[in-house]
Image (tube, rainbow, N blue to C red; front, side):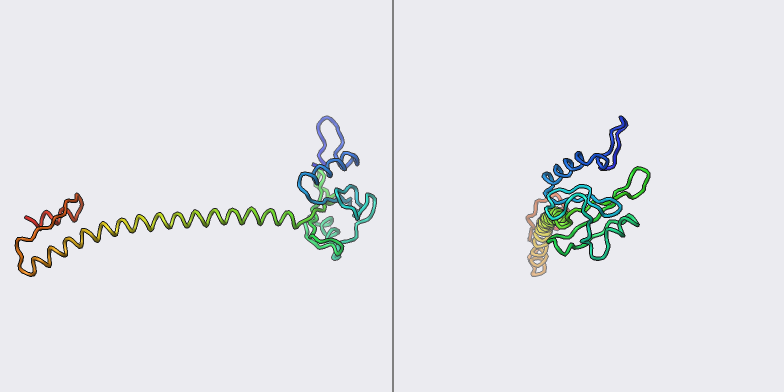
Length: 188
């Protein structure tokens, strides 16, 4: 977005400092996090809600030269500014030709917290769904075992009565399953 040039020839936001500043302020209001835009020399081109830094100042609060490394190889890096509370993420800005022309710095902790909150919500949903599925499965298994044990119990009582010599024993089991067929066979 910052380096995009429209087909009508309008310069990119990076080439229009006032438009870039307005864009940054809009993003800050929308996302509630601080942003800095730096050029290849780590000079601040624009910032949103960062009272400590001014446009034109050189940014030197990356203790391990993480921004310099990001500008060199294009790999985003996280670092902690000794003067800030939140961690900062440095993301390279590439022009359409693929050349790195600067970096955007943004507070990393709010991004991480939002991702963690989303993940936590999803984990709760998955956990509750799994618990509900287990309860439904247990309910079906209990019903199946109850029907099975009642039919088996009736058959056992009939067999025990027959073993005691009661040849007139009948199993009163009027079901249309295998136990009902066994009861019919036993009663004949």
